Length: 264
Ligand code: NAD
Image (tube, rainbow, N blue to C red; front, side, top):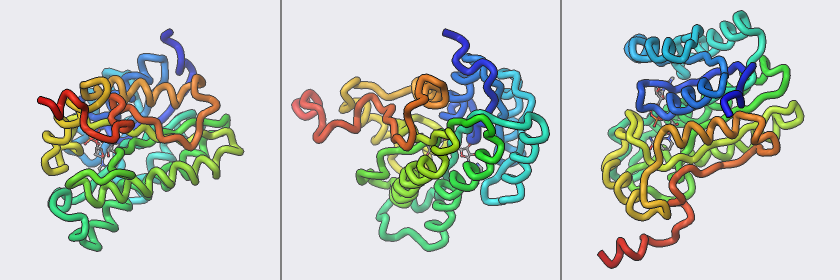
């Protein structure tokens, strides 16, 4: 099975480096024959992302800061000019001020609340709106979320609130675009060691706790998250939309720590 995405073209947003979840998704998609465009946030990330794009044979590598709506418009204009249409979109973008990814959620400032929401949640709606305009033959869209949306995760704070809004956006966008045969889903990944992941205070404790207590007794890899993104973008998931699909070694089903952990 190496042709799931043969003949499909799409955009992957959110590769910062080789550890990024978006890189796991981009690799999985390219391995199945997809043609991929990548975005990067600013020149510093651009220097890391361009060699990665070469590895995938991706010719379209575009700057995009979702806080700058002109740069978002520029990306979709370039896609339209070069490809005409696209078939899929991956949104793997989040940001919050590190100084508020610790302590009490109640202390979140208005400025950081707004910025976190715009970058980590509303950007998804903004890129979807532009993507569907060039999805003439239907399409599939995936964003990345975390279970801090529905359960309190210490230090995740405003990002949990943003992920709750992001997951609600997935359902609304799925309803909006379903009649055009465009599916919208999210993958809820377990903790992964990435730049964004490291921004959450005590991330290492959370990573180790979930490893010890998830049914599979391990953390997930970006390859595993990437292959679930691939599934949702492929025709294998043609009947699936509006879903939050967990790829977390099963951690979300547990109501208490594993017994072997409690007895240790
Ligand atoms: P990462 O740091 O590799 O990727 C985050 C990306 O967001 C980076 O490429 C960064 O450039 C981009 N970004 C931030 N602000 C931006 C802006 N203003 N404009 C454009 N791009 C911007 O980390 P990651 O963990 O791979 O994160 C990808 C997604 O996965 C995020 O939505 C994150 O919340 C989600 N996620 C991560 C974990 C985890 O444990 N790492 C778990 C579940 C979900």
